[in-house]
Amino acid sequence: MIELIKTEIKKSIDLKHKVLQSREILTQLEVLVNECLKSLKNGGKIIFCGNGGSFADSQHLAAEFVSRLRFDRAPLASIALGTNSSNMSAIANDYGYNQVFKREILSLSNKEDIFIPISTSGNSENVLDAIIAAKDKG
Image (cartoon, rainbow, N blue to C red; front, side):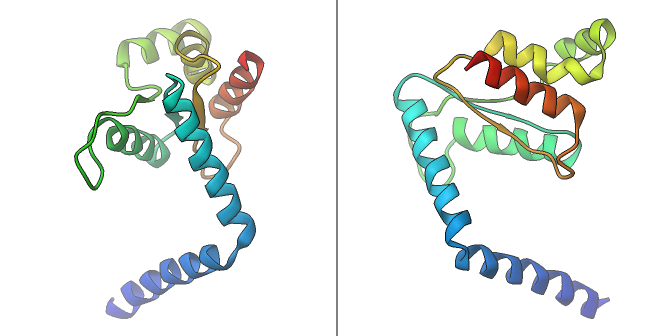
């Protein structure tokens, strides 16, 4: 079991080394950070969404923006879609589960916001529909 644990930790370390050596990924991250800062300075918010583990990640990331992450500071506007269980159940019941994030994007977002969808597979219909709605909204 220890060898399996060490193997998994090594995979994580190896991935982080690859990210550190990828100019393309680092540049994309820099652009994302700068766009998030611009959004927050202009009164926007950071919006996350995802399913399953990505849903948990979305909630965690939004909480770090609103709370403190590393040091005391003013809260930063952020939300994870799908956390209002009444919204989610009503939308899923009335329109289908694939619409839960899209409907929230349409009602809660504006052009100053940054939308960060998270999908392990990249094929989650409800996440893809939310991306299209966010693009259509500007």
